[in-house]
Length: 427
Ligand code: PLP
Image 1 (tube, rainbow, N blue to C red):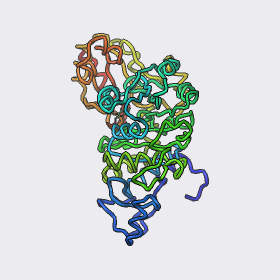
Image 2 (image 1 turned 90 degrees about the vertical axis):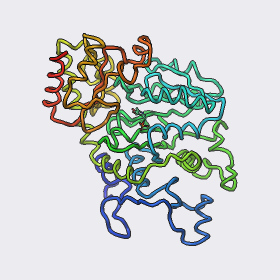
Image 3 (image 1 turned 60 degrees about the horizontal axis):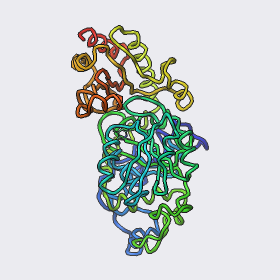
Image 4 (image 1 turned 30 degrees about the vertical axis):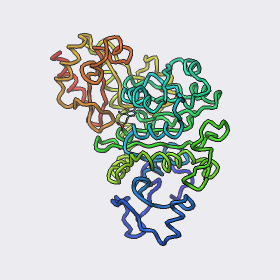
């Protein structure tokens, strides 16, 4: 790139990519291969011993994946990244690198329901304990910290409620206790929020959502902010102690400000195995090229829909941080001045039956469990994703009987509103 300081849209198209040196192909090829020929035995030994960077086997790295990693690292302002098979795989590898059995971490209650399950159930089986805190009260994070606490975890823009979080306030708690702050930036994308600029140390994404953007491929990514000192406390032995399988290499001492991304790759991905397919990496890269345009349009359409719903007589309330009278509006303006994103919730005055009936009456919207597609999506959590919870638990999770979640797509906004109008008329 000729510019020393390329802008976000330029990075979204060019970062990490060049014409293919062998064929001249301008778009990043899909390197559909499992393994890579070594030049000779010394080359093979150097790669296996981490003495030289290079491709060995697609479970650990792949050239299409490498372009995706460099691009997302550039968009987030990180030092390096590791792409994996899904957002959940990214979370698993981050905690695998940080935690030992008996350790704990403090996570926001305001999270995607699947993350609440992963932390509360699967992670327990590894002996990793989660402690829940409230993003509206940063001191609730501090209350849970003890000498076995290894990290703090939040979402920058919480799913499903669409609430922007005061990242800097929680980063201050993390700093005070010398803990890394891990931020899931899936709902905002780096176009709206860049958590590393507000004190995060590691950023994660489900690439499945806005970065891919077209509802066609699963993926996840871990971005190393390069900010955290993994050796200072002795609490992160995977990074600060010699690795026997790599002839005693100490990853932090050897790789410095990108050691976390390296550890997730050469320990976590190597041994646990959730590699992204080269084809999915290609589709997600193609999606990222239009991320700025899509996020602008998602936010414009969502704001117009939220304003329209607010005036509808059958609608009880609308929670969209982009609305000027939202209690979350000031935080949204501070962290995400370019827009408030695509996903939000609203409540129907008619409760459970109205919510279920409304969803059934929509025609342009797709009724499914996803967000961040070009298409407009809808779900009624109380009759689907949260149906197994008690009424009290549903309300606490922001999934009470009247709640409908929308992920507003890129269609003409007049058509989105017309579909909502005809479905509401039948409720
Ligand atoms: N984080 C957030 C905010 C999500 O919405 C999701 C999925 O919906 C995930 C993580 C998990 O990602 P994946 O479905 O790619 O495993």
